[in-house]
Length: 353
Image (cartoon, rainbow, N blue to C red; front, side, top):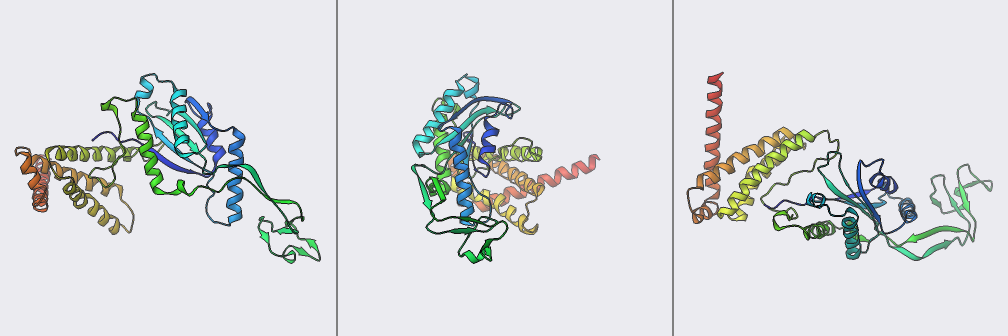
């Protein structure tokens, strides 16, 4: 299996704080380049527009001021000495041309110098050629939280404004828009999947064939590994699980190369991993037990390894047949063999002790 690209899509509730974090030399130990398609004032206005719009909508939850892609680049981009400014400019302008969104981005390494990556923040709104200004056609009243009131009586006592209440006089500006509405495209699931393919193709352009990446295939027999973030308290757990998942993926590769039908491997994955994990979560009251999950995958790896081992001495036709019509019986047989070997190893261990 070709290495999978790592591209994450995030919502940003604090746009200016995030921009400062990715572009500051004080925050980033190994900062190589920063590039933006609009000046800083644009991003401040965008953040304010989103906050104002969110407030007026009365929606509960968190205001999303922008969105961000985190793109892990192959280390060849760094080791080959490719100019960081040109690399960043190429990625940002390619995205801008494809999707029409203004961007601000930064390129840097993590603390351990093993993750060369881009943070690309983009706007979901287009800036208007001319601001839309709304003028009050009558006196308007607002409560202490800034919500518009329908009548004067709700804001006054004996004709005087109550403490905390405000009024905008007739003829004054009560609302102003510098940006258009958010584009619904950026909220669609297909958009994220599409951009992952777009960036993967982009980063593959200068790479040799043996260095090229692929978007991790969904609905495949493979198991995805997880990226370990900075200061992640569960780093050791994730590292251990990733190692087990890679062992599974190696066996899947082996089976596919020998002629096992891909759809049969999906069945194997479902029977050995998906169903046991779902049952484990159900028994745990809806919670995922990390140790149980690892033990399920370890058992699955042992069984699929036994399945591959059992067919190694046969030809491609035998593999296709065994992984086809006889799959369930073959899987059960190998599971019994694994259980027998595990029991025998346990007994030997007890005797030694």
